[in-house]
Image (spheres, rainbow, N blue to C red):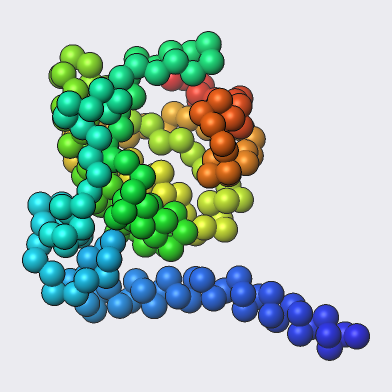
Length: 203
């Protein structure tokens, strides 16, 4: 009986450690062979204006800027109104692959092209409407531990450096929430994160 329990324990531990081992291998591989597209893994590709992407993936980026009215607009969420919401890209290939690799694949480099896309969209905002600072929405500590990091922090750090804006961790998460990927509507997404964040004192 003890041997069976010990076996299950080892199997569980191996399953938990395996993703980290794969992430270490991928990170080491990218240090040795950095010329690899972050979205499609193409090797020896022609560089594109957005670092980390091959020309083909750059050309496929589903932008939501320019004349698209949904790319920059005010947004009413419940009783609160956001003065402006900036959407850089649609959730389509190769963007979906970049996001999945950043969130679940421990590929921190994937934050670079996503942050660049957000920066380009933000630069279209008139100067008087641009934000004074950037503040990431913090991940719950347990989820951050399981994923090995906070992808929102990675994105905002690169975005702040790109736009020359101060980065201020003025938000705190006060409760855990369900995964937003399972939400079926905007209303459900808003309900799931209601009262989940608070502004730190002294702001």
